[in-house]
Image 1: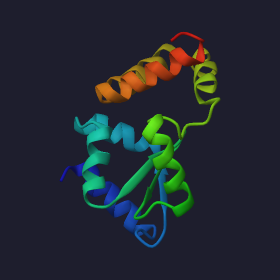
Image 2 (image 1 turned 90 degrees about the vertical axis):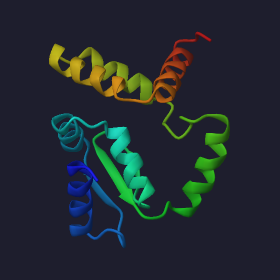
Image 3 (image 1 turned 30 degrees about the vertical axis):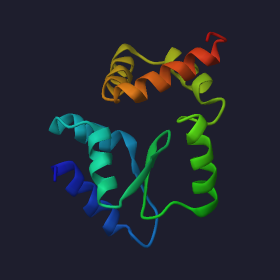
Image 4 (image 1 turned 45 degrees about the vertical axis):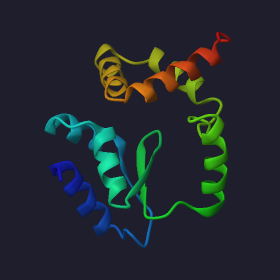
Length: 136
């Protein structure tokens, strides 16, 4: 178990996990992964194997033991046809607007985040972005 995994587990347990869903700041976890030379996706996969599930939001990562029932059913239907179907329609537009206002260091961090994604995640992201601009 990596230092990052241990730290996340301690933090979420201190905040009421597994009885409660717990949010932790995305940036802090991402920076810790970077500092310790591990991929965020790998850390989340390891936690998933320990029945610590997560959802990444804009600024937070939500950790929980069980998915809420209504969302789980909706997500499984969407994931069968679109693995990124749970994202809001305006997610990519908002992301593009925010990237226009970033300085070079922030853009570098975004690039590193994308590079830490699995090839499948990157492909899905690019396909979703292409669809946003009317290209198929």
